[in-house]
Image (cartoon, rainbow, N blue to C red; front, side, top):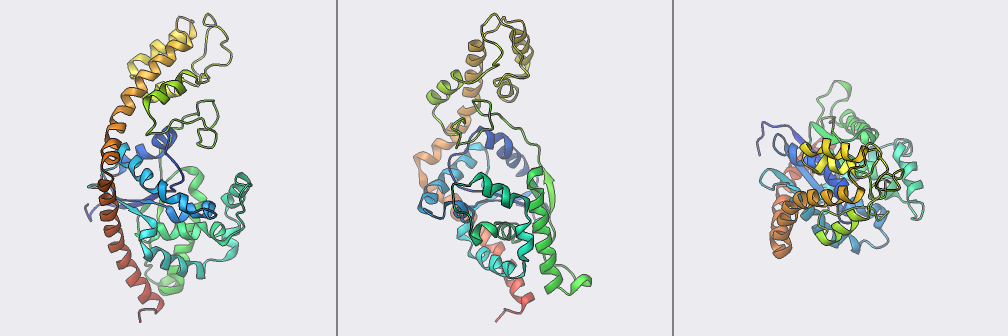
Amino acid sequence: MSSQRQRIVSGMRPTGPLHLGHHFGVLVNWVALQQDYDCFFFVADWHAMTSEYADPRRIKQFVPELAKDWLAAGLDPEKCVIYQQSQIKEIAELHLILSMITPLGWLERCPTYKDQKEQLAAKDLNTYGFLGYPVLMTTDIIMFRPAQVPVGEDQLPHLELCREIARRFNYLNCGGENGTPFFPEPTAMLTRESKLPGLDGRKMSKSYGNSIALGEPMDSVRQKVMAMLTDTNRMRKADPGDPDVCNLFPYHKIMTDPGRLPEIMTGCRNASWGCVDCKRLLVQSMERFLEPIHARRAVYDKDPSLLWDVLTEGNRKAREKAAETMAAVRGLIGFDF
């Protein structure tokens, strides 16, 4: 990794298997970014506790599975740092320090706070951990002092709060408005999102049971594809269809040979193609797409020690950078006893 390249930081919570929506919405961008940036990608296991605190033991089994999905998707530990949040104890220390200076009102006005409480109404989220989620997120980011953070537009409010917390720390500990800031205020790297609908046309989600996991066996993938929702207005094969409203076509646009898309669109619109024909072609496209992902994942399934070697080395590299940051922070706040 080159010190001349800009650094970026991003992570995911280990709450279950990643699906195709995660791959095209996030991982494709990460794989591209590792070519040109110093990337720090972390398994956010402490973040997972905000909603899974009643049984945190479940998180342990999801940590290696998440890392395997990343490696299978194409993340290269020679090109990026892959680490586990809870193994970098400096993150907990900086989180504590930042929680001392973050006004309560900033957290309560965060737009995603109320939204997520409503979405997860079945769980008791009246905890500091949930309210203070943005403080821990800020810690994850500024610990490594990145220039940019890859985010979607829906995450911009969280990033702006991160910038405000960093700005407040700098003001209080680096000489006020005229001082030299220690923590950079990271800017948003708006990433292109390729959103896939779920198999039933709704948002793809594990909780809806309408997703295809990256590590899912092909027999299961075939069954799911053949049962997918298509154009609900096309009741019979002889009825003309509309690819723009069909649930299959977004998958074809991402995974099928682009040269075949005109054939698919024409066949659908003039009813020379049936939905079963379209599904069979999609199965073939998915097999070609998933084969290398499954092959890379099989290496770590066969020898789990290889995965833990990746995490151990990533943790070492992340801890080294975090220790440098915290040595400076302790000096700035006068806690360098």
